[in-house]
Image 1 (cartoon, rainbow, N blue to C red):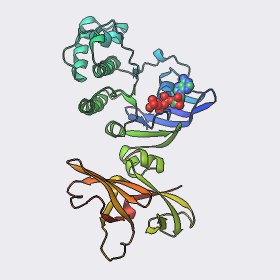
Image 2 (image 1 turned 60 degrees about the horizontal axis):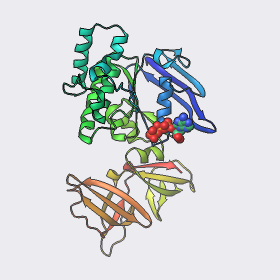
Image 3 (image 1 turned 60 degrees about the vertical axis):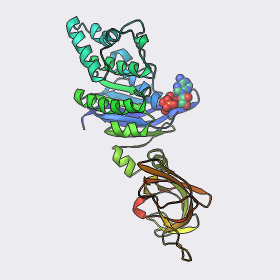
Image 4 (image 1 turned 180 degrees about the horizontal axis):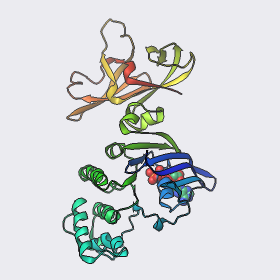
Length: 352
Ligand code: ATP
């Protein structure tokens, strides 16, 4: 791999609080990486360390093999779109976007045509001469993206760049941002807490929790093979059920023995994760014993959302969230007794 940026054992303390611990990550040239995790997990701090606005308490930051820990932010040549967008309020949109080019001595005519091209790319109509103060939050975000790309950056760093956009525009800007990144071939790191956005944008996802990397892989791999219960729940809202290993390939969950693969020894406590789209159930049979590999439950809540349906199943004290196509749940009724089926291929088992 052509390593562009390398983080080696990065740690960060604010006073007594350790907010990042032993973060190791290699990013290839041209790669698009998303830092994903819940609020407070350290995403922004990590991005700020890469940008140079924050210093790591320990570890090394290498750009093309060179230690850049002590290189000032403006000397790193990175394009940045941060939460506080720092657009110049007294300047027009065009002046903001052209600012970096002006510093570099690009000729006025060339600057103007590049501004037009960039405005077109970020889907803004002809507003080049409008003052930034007369723009909506979403328009400002797009101007900030255009400004960061005006002079091709070494690295493109974005912190929640699309958070001010409504759902529809956000969706189309995600596609646009990904295509822009591919067109420029620029190594990009985006911070987001939105898993859909992270999966739409990235070549690789870095899932953080409590200042530590939980998993780093392609979006589909992280989704299909979560490294632990945290990742399974965070990415795809998996249902987590406590269980105990009773023997080879047998886990007791909510009092029912289920055939699920595990290499853990008898007596081990585990967490069984099942995604809401993988929950399957059948109506309980009158006068019949419970089906094999199932847990008895009841439909507690059911909502037809048009294309799909969502429901909550209650199994003892545990509530399971399920969703599927409305056709699939056509005969389901609130209060109906069901057998919730556990298929080994649809469950992940983690040591608790
Ligand atoms: P969010 O999604 O809410 O922006 P985040 O994952 O980006 O969260 P950070 O902003 O990196 O999280 O913060 C990580 C932790 O470090 C938080 O507990 C935060 O309160 C703390 N923190 C961040 N900056 C400072 C600071 N300058 N001084 C002290 N604590 C800080």
